[in-house]
Length: 622
Ligand SMILES: Cc1ncc(C[n+]2csc(CCOP(=O)(O)OP(=O)(O)O)c2C)c(N)n1
Image (cartoon, rainbow, N blue to C red; front, side, top):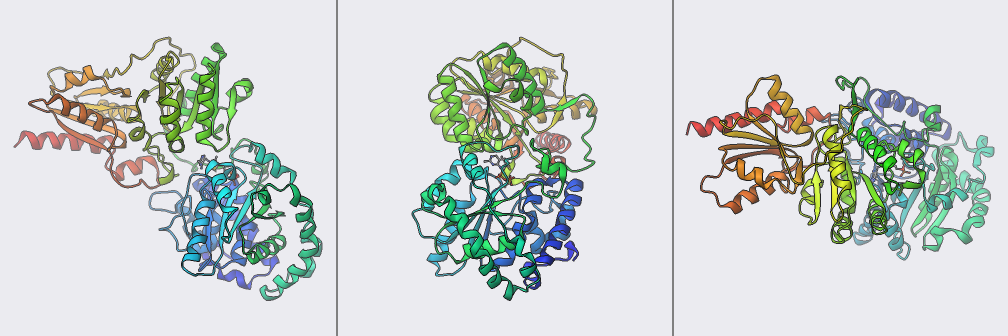
């Protein structure tokens, strides 16, 4: 069958196990071909091919509900629900989302991007079936790393004492992006797949759907029940009040269908533990322990001159590494993003001072607070989007206790292909309102190093150093002992006779600077390195300007410009400068290559500069 021709999963009703196995091979081939070309999550999807087929075979998602945790492993589900033909648009502007998407298909019953949400949402959906007197099944699929997330554990705790029918399919591949960690993982590791139905393969593999399930029920009984008995006494899930079944081989369709059917028959919440191999079918991906095949970039994306460029993550890791060499107190913490944030060398060379806390952002920040209270120097490396999970800890534990933590806020700004759930556009608006912290967005390696010098000199203030996913120029010889002066902005191009200026920071500052230079445009330009505190002295100076453009890679509401406007307002000036603010407005920003997303949102340096020019011209002609 051509993968692109699949319209909906009903064709599976006419499939036997053998045909489903052939389909698995074809889907794997398709995934490898498309993802290596167009980019996306590869290993996680290769691991759930048989599992997703079996789920669609057993359940009917025109009435049952399916919730993927994160959703990065929902590609096979997309294929079976008629979206294979659109895979050439995956994660591109106006194309298929890389996660489940309510707007994309009636078969997508929820959305995510962040870990740990599927059990709570699944429980709510099951509850809603009771409220609405509907008889259906709700299935939440969650990985062994995501189930360790605090939110998921809260949901398990609540679910266990209720009687809602929720089937939690625990997809255990022993991997997070890189190797999974933690005691829950160790517990899961003790549970081995004892046996499978494979030895009876000839008896069931060619049966049609009506005959298959009764046959599996007879064959499976003898095999699975002893497994359950063996592990029941010490089973964590059963102790939490949930039913437990497994572990089941996630690559054996007969086993999966048997087990899913059994789970379907229960009336209580059940965990169906399925063992899969991440990257199944592609040797390099199967052996990958560092997450190289977890997510792939689009092939042939032009990244400009890469010769002297490195990603911001690499540069920050390089700076922190140097600091760790000279200061034995510095300890690095990442919530499961060691590979994404390029911390591998730090972890291998300073194992005693490197902590992977698992997918547990709030806990990671709390651990850092404890380290700091104990007079160590924690550096928390965390993606902007996942920092959202630690909002309360930043206020309640970091800022209120005046702990001098250093945060490397990775992947700030427009994120590109991962889209709405992963945008790094919320951290500024929530950070700028928290007392007793400092927020800096450097625009190059030198400023980043100076920001770290400043941060490590602090005794009672947490410093958030923000950087994007971009690549920038890198010099391995560079080192400075300079520090940034708190709150100080820098004038770049400056002519005191010119009555207008542009204020920006981070990559946007560099983008507009380059645009002005290339196009020989003369205008005052300020690098607002600190977003908190703002440079009040400079603000008093620019209060005399006639026109100001604030160009920021953040939501406008609550961003730098709103802080500036408050300040100007309090000055009660007779002649306020006329201020144009350009950044993200209102809506969630969808997936797509960053430059395209910027153009769509009228945020390219050229668009913004021209708009500023018209803004001035219009005013002058009044
Ligand atoms: C709250 C949160 N933190 C971090 C991530 C980044 N992340 C994406 S996939 C992933 C690993 C998930 O592992 P698992 O749940 O076991 O699924 P697998 O990919 O192994 O199938 C991580 C850490 C995230 N999506 N959400």
